Image (cartoon, rainbow, N blue to C red):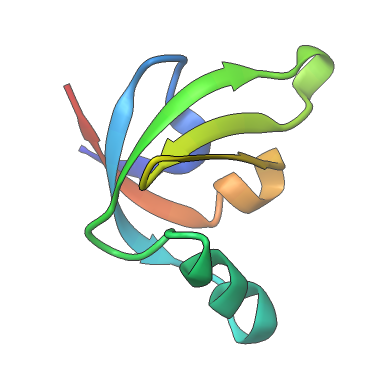
Length: 77
């Protein structure tokens, strides 16, 4: 099922399929491990719609919802 990173609930996993960024931001996310084919797990959501923490390649990274919506994933059940 194709979706975006913001749709993952706590504990759910997904396979990254696309990054809808360009330039510096795209390069920075790829350096952090957000590359097509990488597995990502949603850990916890900050209160009041804040950032969400994700585990990717053994590292925990928090992303804003607006950025998470621009990362395409395939949800793994």
